[in-house]
Length: 173
Image (cartoon, rainbow, N blue to C red):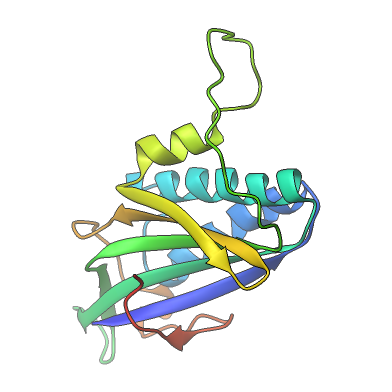
């Protein structure tokens, strides 16, 4: 198994949330994950919430990281074709420069409230989530169990590299 890590620098601008969502869909597609699969939709929603919290509540740039535990196997078709399967929890991390702890807020009985549900959604959609101090700021993380996620061959039918920061990393704590 290898754990692929990709990351995206996000500016302190709410418009960056849409860019982060598009980037996540692209990264999943590069690894052969169906962008309409439930795991992809969940991941995009979680990323949207965590990036929104980072840029709106801190006013600081942030770094979005995805850690994807993958195994590849030979795929039917041309020589070198590979299938990828996520074999463990998919981890999302958002690091920012604020030391203020994330505090889940409850929107309460006001059904018309337009905010206050982000971390509640993360809590409901993810298997685990938390945060910890990181340098002069913090890192908020969550994990989504993707062990049973089906994937299709990567674009081009071969091991398609990600074009962002891609490293082997140890399993996250």
